[in-house]
Structures are given as structure tokens and as C-alpha cells.
Amino acid sequence: MSGPNLHFFSKLRVSGRMAYAKTATRLKGSFIHQLLVISICLTSYQNVVALHVPHKTTQTSSTSELATPPRSGIFEPIEIPPAVIPHYPFPGKSLPPMYPSFPKTYDPVLTGRCPVNFSVISSITEKTASDCTRSLSTVVGNVICCPQFNSLLHIFQGFYSNRSDTLVLQSAVADDCFRDIISILASKGANSSISSLCSVKSSNLTGGSCPVKDIGTFEKIVNTSKLLESCSTVDSLKECCRPVCQPAISEAALLISGIKTALGGKNIVGVPNEIDTLSDCKGVVYSWIARALQFDDANSAFRLLSSCKVNKVCPLEFKQPLEVVNACRNLAAPSPSCCSSLNAYIAGIQKQMLITNRQAIICAAAFGFMLQKAGVMTNVYELCDVDLKDFSLQAYGQEGCLLRSYPADLVYDNSTGFSFTCDLNDNIAAPWPSSSTATSWTLCAPEMSLPALPTSEILGNYSEYLSFPTCFAYPCDAIYLRRSS
Image (cartoon, rainbow, N blue to C red):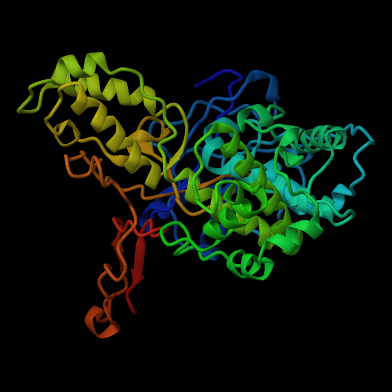
């Protein structure tokens, strides 16, 4: 891509020292080459592959225009004037190599009617602005941006409750504070349309139709000790498959909603109004949790809970694959016309967004079911070499990026721009659904189903890595065992 369009690139986590040596050779003689050599020595061995995402012209400048990416996937260095390098908001984080992209920042214009000192929660707003940066928010919205934005709102609501006896905001104050939050995020480089992107309104801060909104009544009805114990530390290895915090939140929301009492103690939710009330009451429960925890602890917990939710469904939109069905129906052997139609269809899907490895498995199965329903019974994924990474955004049309199922953030470097880590980048075949998986699809491994890891005696003296990339017990995207040297 050329002209004023800006390109963004991700680093893909792949081990190997030789690839770095080749990269350094191509970049020798430049100042950035020296920086890359130093960063390679200080960080774990990771290969860098470029990934580009179109950027709107209005958000670029002459200092940030990039050349057409090379076909080999290895990019040449460019010079960045010191004047365009902004302050790095996360000095404690590592600085991965990345092609530069710099958001425009400015002083926000606030309403002056939101009685909150936003500087107290600046660490969370900075992280949210970074995760929802204008250029990448649409492609990482489902997995990174919106979960972090929702977490910010929960934390803000809990923070606001510290100055009152209620866990929610009044409608007028909620409108003003919501506008201020959006203004602050936009001033730090975030997408100003983040509320539309994430389908969030100021009413999310008001508690809606939930009948219990004050702290006193909440703490009389809910077993807050149990709630805090369940959610103060969310276990990233178990929560999504064997949840502890999620049912505690649901139980508390049900109690304060009054629905259980109205139905004579039965856990039955059958009408839209009751569903809305439960959802509003969950927001009140989140507010209480955010009030009880430190900001960073609350943010980690909320992001983990969001990851459990987003990884249960495929976020991609599938149009009717008529051409694929016509070309691939009643197929018993590889067919150029079938694979051409299938590849063209998937090429359109993969432009939508970046998805996680778990989402890719669900998306592949969902599309497979769609094809089977239309009469394509042959495993065309196998015949046409379709991989999991083919369902996510591509790097130069060659390398797919699957984000981790575990919550991740965009990383901002004050000299190299934004980057994100991609996992499971090897060529793992897309799963073709069978009749048995149609009714019992799950990515959660049963208890004690995983084999014991090899001991050091079995491994012996080796200096390489063993990779087992197909473990589906959340969030085991890939298990890496380092052999002793």
C-alpha cells in the first residue's frame, strides 16, 4: 500500500536466532540496526513479521508516512525525527520492535460537571487509550479495545462510589462524566467513536432498572465476603472453564434484582425485562467489586472475565458462500475451482478483524457447519490447506495473526509505535466439524485429561525448545518446554 495510508505491524512470537541474524544483516549500517541488536540481546528471541492495517488519511502526517512494505516481510529502517516522538505512557513495560505510528495527542476539553479527579485513575485511562488507538481499534475492538473500555467504566463507577453512598451515577452526572471519559481517551489518541464501536452508553453507569443501587442495601443482601473472595483474584487457568468469579457475580446480581424472590425461589429468567434487569444489576455488582479492589487488580479481573466471554463466540460475519457451495459440492478430490472459491471467500473474511486462536477454532467450525448445511460434506479445509490463522487478519497476505486467548494489550513504544503479540502462528489446520461436534462443541479440557509433562530425566540435555501448540485447556494456547542445556 502506498500514498498517505499508514501501515501498522505486529510482532509474531516465533523462536529462532537465525531469523534475527538475517534481519540485523539487512539493517546494518543504520542507527536502528544498533537499537535492534541491543533489544535482541536483552529480550527473548522472537522473530518479527510485518502486519499492515490501513489507516485513514486524516490521521497521518508527513513524518509518519511509510514506504510500501517489502515482499520478503523484512522492512528497511526509517528515520524518525526526535520532535515527533511522544512520551511513552508505560515506562515499566518492554519495548518491542515495531514500525512507528504515533497518535496525535492534545489537552481534552471537559464539561466541568463531573465531580471526579481523573488523574487518580490515569493509569487505567492511559492503558485504555493505548488499547483503543484510532488506527487499530476497529481490528482489535472485539478482543482488546472493548474489554478494556468496559473495564475502565466499571472501575470509574466504583471509584465514583467512594465519594457517595451509592454504586451508580445519576443520569445527568453520568452523561457529563461519560463525555469527559470519551474526551480524555480521544485526547490521548483513542478512537473518538469508541462508544459506538463497543455499544456502550452513559446509561451503563446508572444501574438502569436494577432495584438496588445503594451500598448499604447491597451489602445487606449480598454475601460480600464470598463475592470478594471469589473475584479478588481471578484464576486465569481455571475461570473460563471452571468459573468461580462469574457465578458469584451472577448470584449477587440475581439476589439484588429481586427476580428470584418474585419467582418463588426459582432461577428462571424468561422475559426480556428480567434479562435487562439482571444485566443492569451485574453492572452494580461490578461497581462494588471495583470499589473494593485496587485499580490494577480490578482491571486484571475484569479483563479475564471479558476474555471468557469473547472467546465463546466467533465475532466474524459470514455471508452466504454460494460460489463456494457451487464449486465444492459433491467433491472427492482437490479441485482448483473449489479451492479458488474457498480461498477468495476466506480472504474477504480475514479482512474483518484480528481474532484469538480460540475464536478461530469456533469460526472455522461455524463456517464448516454452514458449508455442510448447504451440501458441502467433504473436508474442504484439508483439501485446500486452510489453516486456523487464515480466519484472522493477514500480514502481507502471507502470515496470519491469531491473538492470544489470554487478555492482552497493545504496547506503545515512544520510538517505534504500537505492537501486539500474536500466538499460535504455525500452520495448524482448521478443524472440519463432524456430526458429533455439532451438539457438543467445547474447548475446555475435562479434569485431569492432560498428560503429565516430561521430566528432566526424560528430556535429557538439549538446547532447543519443544512446542506443543494444540493444547486447548484455557488459556493454554501453546505449551513451551525449554530443555536443559
